[in-house]
Image 1 (cartoon, rainbow, N blue to C red):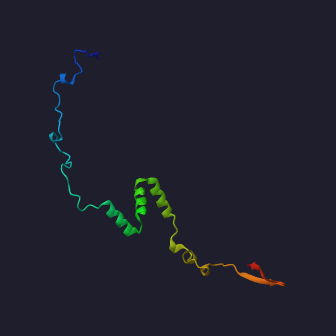
Image 2 (spheres, rainbow, N blue to C red):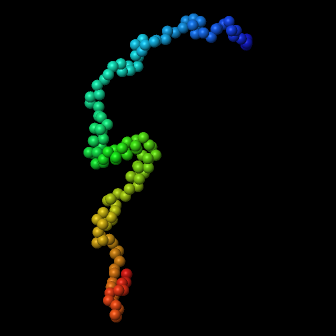
Length: 131
């Protein structure tokens, strides 16, 4: 293979010395819009505004603006979203809980301890026995 060496006389390095140069547009109107980019203002009527979405989320989910912000943050952080979904998935199903878990009533406990008060001579009701 021949070893070609470019001599300095072959090209001066000046762009203007090139033949068959492409025409470079100087205005965007000189370009062809073959990708159908917007060329004029379009109406945004019918699109939901951020405040509209926030208000709807608050109405539907019953959360305030701070909660809406937290939901938005989840869409931007996969680790937080995954953690939340994991926590929700591990939440107990209320149908599987014992009655006392939702009523909070002592009477709904099973296997309640019995407490008996006993009295000894000279002392009134100061000894208690758990059974």
